Amino acid sequence: MTVIGKARCATCEKEKGILKCEGCLLTFCYNHAADHRQELNKKMENVIYKSDLIQQTLAERTNDLKNNSRMKEINDWEYKSIEKIRQTAEEARKEFRHTADHITQVKVRLNNLMEEIRQSYQENNYYETDLHQWKSTLSQLEEELQFKSWNSKLQHDPIPLETKISFETPTPRLYVPQLSIPYIKEFRKWSQNGVTFAGGNRS
Ligand SMILES: [Zn+2]
Ligand SMILES: [Zn+2]
Image (cartoon, rainbow, N blue to C red; front, side, top):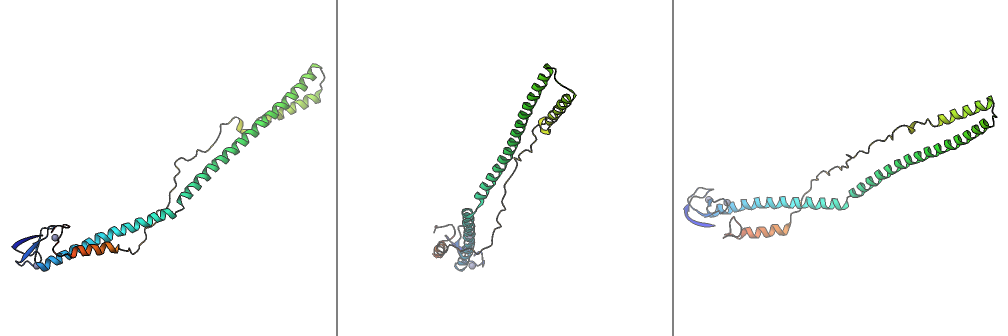
């Protein structure tokens, strides 16, 4: 506050302004200086109100985080996805082993048949019925090796790496904030100690 001689009050424009606000540099008479102070006071309370509002929202969000099952959902999703891939790979391995077993079987049967044919040939001991039987068995073995996947490449769908988990952002709720009462009280006391004007504790 600066006391100056006869200046005009910014509010009533009368030539009795004696207090100058250090904040806006306007001069006021005693009455209007109080009004001006009150106006500032109101603005200040709005600022405090707003910060309290944010603080409350922050507290709610923090609480939401604590109680949220989100982390569990992510873990579940991860576990289920890995489990699904593991199962699919296991099925593919099973099918592969089955195919390998089958080929081994065909090999054994072919070896036995070839041995039989070789012996019969050496001993010159075979007839039309034998030839017919062997031809038929050979055709069967040939056919058994014609399964689809043997000559084809491994077919698989790529795992979509761009997979994203997203959660709905909670809609901000409307609530009546509780003002931090002690702070407001203290502030009022400070603003009421008369002479001190804008600009904190300067006097
Ligand atoms: Zn005035
Ligand atoms: Zn002012």
